[in-house]
Length: 139
Image (tube, rainbow, N blue to C red; front, side):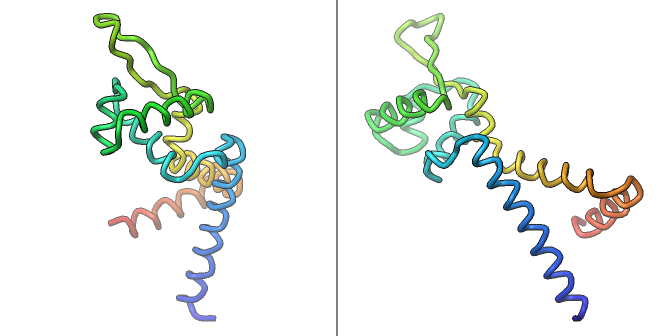
């Protein structure tokens, strides 16, 4: 087998492990009850320090009633919570729960899980060699 095929097979194996890490996280976070679109909406909510249903509807280009129903579902699933504005009691902000924050940062958590697996499998010298190799590729 030539080097290109070896590299391909090795990299594919590494991505398979990353996928397995992702599957484990999906189970841990019970994300199977969410659609990909809903996960994207949770990520969007997480990008804002303070966001209202009206503003979220504008951003997502959806109706306020649709967003209201979505937020109700997310509250039931412990992904978001609402808090009333101290200055204007009519305004409610939407915030991510800890579970919602984990879902919003799913890709980072998946990568961290893979890196943790690498750290457990490699000694310090091997980790340094791998870092140097990856830095070369990044440039």
